[in-house]
Image (cartoon, rainbow, N blue to C red; front, side, top):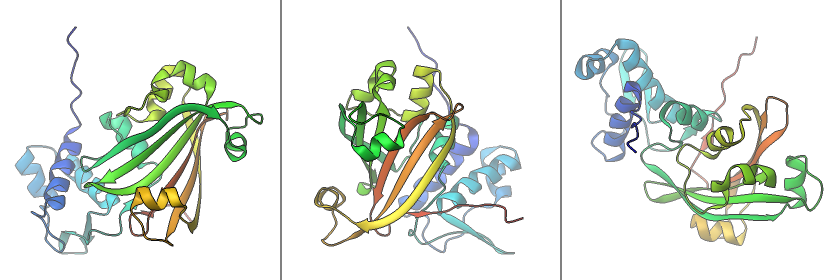
Length: 247
């Protein structure tokens, strides 16, 4: 039976095109990128659409504006990531990663919950959970090692969680569509420590190396945990950026 193809929004197509030019070296650090007016004319879109495309690249750290001068390609590191960026991309494009990133699923299985996982998911000791471990690559280089856990009942309703295959729209979007539960809030706890032997090997790091660790808990509208993820990233791969109102 034929299926409709999902077309990314126009601003996503524009930002993907510019990002590809930056990643491929056609636009280098310090080069000026087309202005909003130029993009709107070239792509035959409204100016707010062009503005939104450049905003995506600003959030990702690929470009930055200079007052009165324009928008320019930044140095490739550090990469900035807002905590909710992947959720926004999944909702708007059906894919959680930008074009130059991909994930390799290393583990997808049912296991007994470690104590810290049970506490994060509000489960009794030794409860069965689903575990998914993935390695994220950017331009072919490892930039994140993450493991997600779900209550076994979620695994029964969402069977792809226990298959070692990518879920392009992201696991939260898949869990929502499979269970009817909706993600409502998330909490991040960020810390640093030395990488263990497995992390050193998978991330290609020398010993000893410090890593950034984020413990991420997603809760539904009733406050019940949907997902607990622990992500480990090497030095220089990410910075985490939050914007908030002081008054």
